[in-house]
Amino acid sequence: MKILLTGGLGYIGSHTCICLKEAGHDTVVIDNLCNSKISVKDNIEKITGSEIAFYEGDIRDRGFLRDVFQREQRKQKIDAVIHFAGHKAVADSVEEPIDYFENNIAGTIDLLAVMEEENIRNLIFSSSATVYDPKSPVPYKENDPKSPVNPYGETKYIIERMLCSLAASKPSWNIVILRYFNPAGAHKSGLIGEDPGGIPNNLFPYILKAAKGELPALSVFGNDYPTPDGTGVRDYIHVSDLAEGHMAALKTMLTGRGEENPTVYNLGTGRGYSVLEIIEAFEKTNNVKVPYMIAARRAGDIAWSFASTEKAKKELHWETTRGIYDMCRDIWRFGQEDLV
Ligand code: NAD
Ligand code: UD1
Image (cartoon, rainbow, N blue to C red):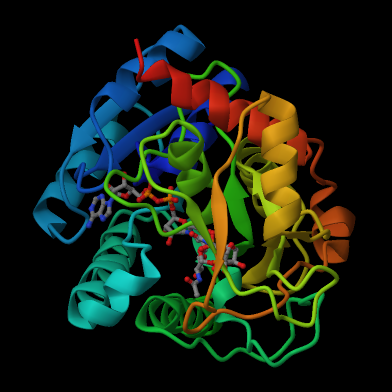
């Protein structure tokens, strides 16, 4: 198959691109490099031993998109699009909500419009567990109430709603929505991973930098939550498992889907780890110290989040195979790469 990935040089897109290439599919990648580097392309090619078709540009530029689709379709039909491109930092979205509406929502509308023009109607969309109502009990099931609490989450939910309306009006669209839980880890080669730059907001990238001595001690945001050790519990999923989840979703979408359209799947492990458990796992796996201190709760955080994985298991025949130690080991290995 030939699959086009928007945002394909980003953290999750690059791992999915590797999986697709390794399974023998053709890939076309579009990225404006606003949150990734061109060296990721070279590393994907190094890992897979084959070239990828890459177009640098913005999905909000319809002329550019049209040109890429037409040029690629002349060679071979594009079977599906996986839409990763977007902004994803919750705190930034509170600072600059219009930027998030523009890039995530307007960008998706531009992509949908050009796909419709070009008769490509198979789409996988990257959504997030952040759309769930934090008051719902865990594990979150796909049909649980939604109530995003920040502009980033709003953009994901609005796009989900748009995709529902689109599929209802035009059933020739074939859409899968994937709600990721907390992606972590890196490619086993150590060449590809998450490089947020600056001071990371997310737990794993911060732990990596604190363990390397590049940042001061990790602040553990609250130890008075109603969890076993008082720290927040999350469903961390290895990014390579997540990438394989896309392969499974693609297969189900293009071969044997049911009535539901869009079909929504949680991609998580179904198990949560606390912040202190993650620190301990990281220290043990890599034989390093993670300096930390207990700090106040972070605004907007919740005690628990983890996925119900039943639907993905049953319908996608997919489940995670990597654990927390794999995530700790792989992110550390990736973290050593930029020392050389
Ligand atoms: P990322 O920032 O690493 O990757 C996104 C890529 O899209 C980047 O390479 C960026 O340069 C590109 N991009 C952004 N806007 C673009 C535009 N207008 N035109 C072209 N390219 C553009 O993020 P990621 O972690 O790989 O996330 C991928 C998707 O998954 C995002 O939509 C994100 O919201 C969603 N998601 C991520 C997480 C997470 O924790 N990483 C969790 C849930 C959902
Ligand atoms: C956050 C986003 C979510 C996004 C996800 C990506 C919020 C409210 N939610 O989720 O939309 O999809 O990232 O992975 O921002 N922690 C610390 N110290 C730190 C950093 C984090 O103690 O320096 C704790 C947090 O309180 C939380 C856990 O670690 O309990 C995970 O935090 P983080 O990696 O930021 O992810 P989420 O908050 O779950």
